[in-house]
Amino acid sequence: MSDDAEILLQFYFEEREQARKTEEQRSTVTNLVLVIASAALGIIAQKGLTTDMLPLSLLLVALGIYGAIASEKFYERHQFHIGRTAFYRRRFVKLKPDIQLEECRKEALDEHLKNFPRLFKIRLHYIWLTLHLAISILGLVLTFVILA
Image (cartoon, rainbow, N blue to C red; front, top):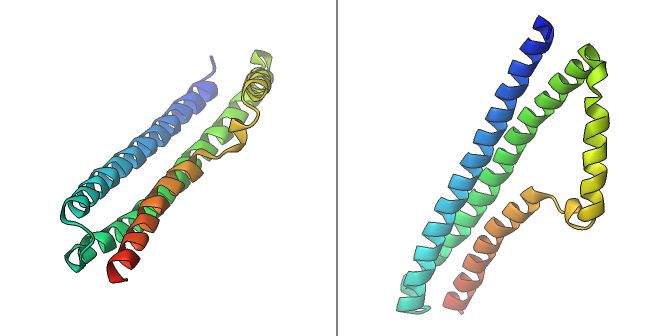
């Protein structure tokens, strides 16, 4: 393989690794948000919906908003790294057109779309965003119930 192709592959793998690390960080933050939210909900469930629980319900609101913002930022960073891998892949294909990489990718995508036509349309980051926003909405609902 040519030196140029090897260099592009190294950059490609580095960006893939950075994208993977970003997803791991998103997962870690989400797990932390879920643990704290679960603990807060457990305390609220034990103590009841009294005004003493108002700080915990507001914590849920803040925690959900923080998780949503963090999740979207991790998505942005992931897309940044994936975008760079696409650039390196296109350059690699120009250097090595005989391997027909883009044709293989298109065939794999077509097969995947055939097997999962509806699920493919759902963006994964919307699922993560919805989870965090649900925590925030739950906190708002509990806050209104406590204040009512």
